[in-house]
Amino acid sequence: MTISGGPRKDGTSARMLQCFTESLLRSSGEHSFAFRHYDAYDCGFAPCTDCRACRRFEGCVHRDMEDFWRDFENADGIVIASPIYNLSFPAPLKVIVDRMQRYYNARFFLGKKPPIEKFRPVAFLTAAGNPREDGEMAAQQLRRIFTVTHCELVCHAMIAGTDETVEETEALFAVSNCVEKFLLSIKPDITK
Image (cartoon, rainbow, N blue to C red; front, top):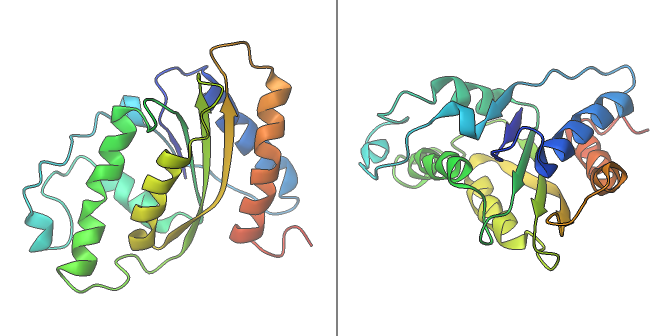
């Protein structure tokens, strides 16, 4: 499963995601991957209203993310690509993260441990205009929700200083190590 959090279809994080998926397909050998892609800007998901219904029953009263939840729970791995805005991700991606409150409530209020049985590794690809940005605050936000959703952030690739020109080779280099770590965690026998 891939999730794009950037507003520009040709932005740096979108190019990183493209490099990642292409590299993953090249590196996987005889193993095949199919990607279900979600663009946070195109999805138009409603934000969490803290109605607390998910404390009483599993799921969410807002039904706009049912396909997303099914794909999220069944994915073998998740790749999230996003620009960094003010030390975090853009609002449409933050909506998705906030709506994962349903899993937190399933665990801590409904007693479902873990709320998702299947483990999924996660790759996080980020880009920022600030040359000193490391994307760690956004990664930390994801790590917290992933402890509840039975995911693990296995790699984080970052390109900083994107207000200047970023070469395509720079994007490829930034994701190459991440692809290898992701492959090892999703299918340990692929790289042997």
